[in-house]
Image (tube, rainbow, N blue to C red; front, side):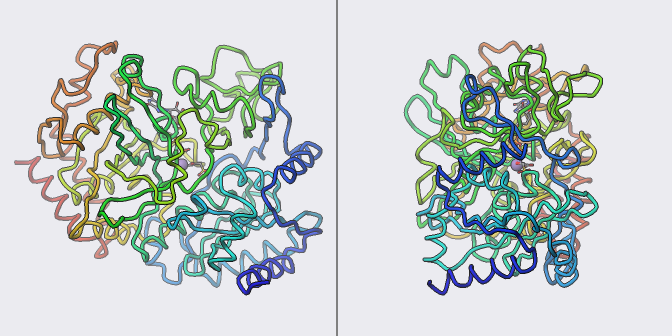
Length: 583
Ligand code: GTP
Ligand code: SPV
Ligand code: MN
């Protein structure tokens, strides 16, 4: 055995001595292994087979009703110094966190199997990719990691070659929320999670590794780990622009990543290519551009609202080889959720006979897990070791008022301010109140593994000699009228806005300069064929100076919370815009 594998082996055995599993299983990612695990989960009830005619090889998992979303208040960054974690993270001293976690892990796998899950985040051959090993006692986690990452023998071979990997230790524990913690030790490249089997808390390659530990590594190594989709927009001339877009959880990344162009655009020859729907790792190439990979291999997407009308590509990939978590089922055992169609479900997400008095049939944060290759708009470019070049970075939030449909930052520093100042209404993707506007810088509030002030400085540092950085934009698909109805049709029609963005990148579209940034000319967005309310475009592109002055003051207060660590360039930018609005 090489010394690299010996080190991994030693770690696995030290974990086994603490957690005392009945068995240890090293995952190779094979089909035979997956079938055996599926069989086991059908026997234990962890999985329920769905209608094998309409949905072959699809399964339903019902999680513990207290364990259905990420838990930000139980998620910690345990850096040596509190200031390294910053005001944007819960912090615990590493020694205290280790003592607490060791007590919870003590004997937690008695009677269970310990699975060793080697995985690679990104194409196996990519220099931007990074490996990890997750130890877990949940076969559901193994099955999901197999879809979401490059899991098994190939990842283990890369680990053996490189000797470098992020360690993740996960146990379901007893699923009691009082004994649930998701701990990150960035200086040790270590993640420990106990008491939850849900997505981002338990599939440690995703938010824990690819974003929290990833962002920490990216800061010291000169790259970016972001909560962004990556999509290619090909125009009728065959020119493709890759766009990376950061929207908070449940704010439209999966939908935008696999958008289907409106009929007239399709007929004209527009195409949309999906590279990623949640996470983007990018680094400057020798040509000065930012090159991006999707570190994931699958989608863990929000089910409610997914329909033939809103996201036909998603529906098309969900009729085979998929895992559904906390959705409802119809009388003939097909998966169902609110917004799918007019059928009435038979059982709700908890397996009870459906009764509207109990609330939605599918949990609002119910999800599907599926291999990215099943998406009709998926592109082989997602396997490119070097990634794809990014033309535009787009920030966006869920804001019923104030924020225009689209605007463009004047330059990189302004763009970093636009990202840092982002705010959005909270959603069901995390526990807690829904619909409350909060600052969510770069959609990374729950995911940045270090102090936001240092993260903003890191973003600013990309502007240097030779850099050919993407243009930065902000969008808002969620403006509402006085009756609470969305003003913009959204979904496929968002391509109309992306068209303007691509045209700006290619130097083909005009813009109107305002204190908050550059907005499209009123007729620069193609609204042909849309049934918009009179005045909708005016409202969507209006800059309300008084309301924006209040917003800039609020952004200034938010920046105050980072004290002296805030980069002065951001403060200067905020003051400059505030003055321009007042003037
Ligand atoms: P995470 O996986 O949690 O990171 O979420 P996400 O950002 O990928 O969000 P997703 O695309 O799954 O969308 C979440 C919800 O927003 C779904 O219910 C969608 O139907 C809805 N949604 C997405 N795009 C639009 C849009 O353009 N307009 C409107 N009104 N709703 C949208
Ligand atoms: C999100 O909440 O942003 C998700 C789902 O993408 S989770 O994997 O739970 O983080
Ligand atoms: Mn997400």
